[in-house]
Image (cartoon, rainbow, N blue to C red; front, side, top):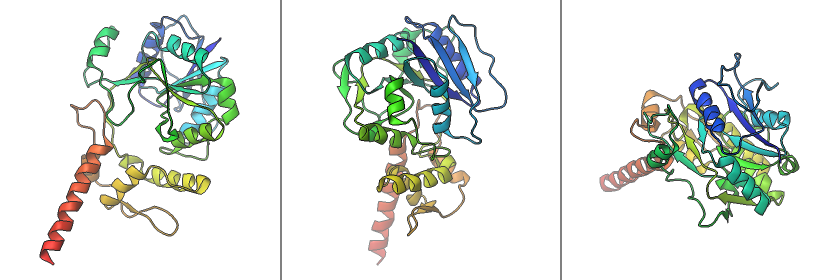
Length: 308
C-alpha cells in the first residue's frame, strides 16, 4: 500500500524541515510527502530518499480545509497520513498507522507529545524526545490496546491522523465552507460519524509537537471562530466550540444574539496576555484560562450579592 504524507505550511520553515527530517528517519519510509504551500515562496528542504512535492492550492486566503483537501487530491497514495507542519513523526509512525489500517477500517488518530521550549532537535534523539514530551491535559490518552474506539466525533483532531484515500473520498474531505481557524475539525469528525466511518485512537503512531507561542482560547482568530461557529450551527443545527465562545463571553469579547454569536469589541493586549502561552508551558490551555475567568465571575457575583 502506497503511503502519502500530507501537510500544509505557511511560514514555520524550521518546523517543516524538522518534519521532513523525522520522516527521513522513519523505519518505513513514506512514498511521498505532499505539502500545500500557503505562501508565495516554496521551501528549501533537506534531501530525502522519497519525493517531496510542494503544491499551491487554488483558493485565496487561509483555508485549512481547502489546503488539506488539495494536498489529498494531489497525493498518489492509497493511504493518507495528515500531519501538521509543527509535528516531528516518530520513526514507527508510518508503520503503526499501516498496521492499524490492516486491523480496522475508519479514521485513525495517533499519539501526540508536546515538546518544551528549547528542546534540542539536532540531532533528532527520539529517546530524548520521549523523555521530555508531555501529553496535552485536555486530550484523550492512548488506548490500552493497539486500537481503541473513539465514541465522540468532537474529539477528532487533524494534528495527526490517517485514513485510506477511499475513506477520505467517501466522506468528501473537509468542508471548505470553513474559512480561517476553527470548526473544520469538528465538522470533519461529524462527517465521518454520519458516513459510518469509525474513529479510532491508536497506541503509537506518535508525533512530537514542536514548541511555538500560541493563544488559547484563540482570541487572535476570534472573527473566524465566530463565523465558523455560525456556519457549523447552520449546517448541523447545534453549536460547536462552546468552550472558546464561553471564554470570549466572559472576557467581554463576544455574546450570543438572535443571529448567533457576534463580537462586541476589539481584542486588546490584556486579552492576548491572558491567553498567551507561557514560555515554561509546552502547550496553551483553554481550561486554565476558563478556570481563571469563571473564578473571577464567581467572585464578582458574590461581591454583588453582598453589596446588595
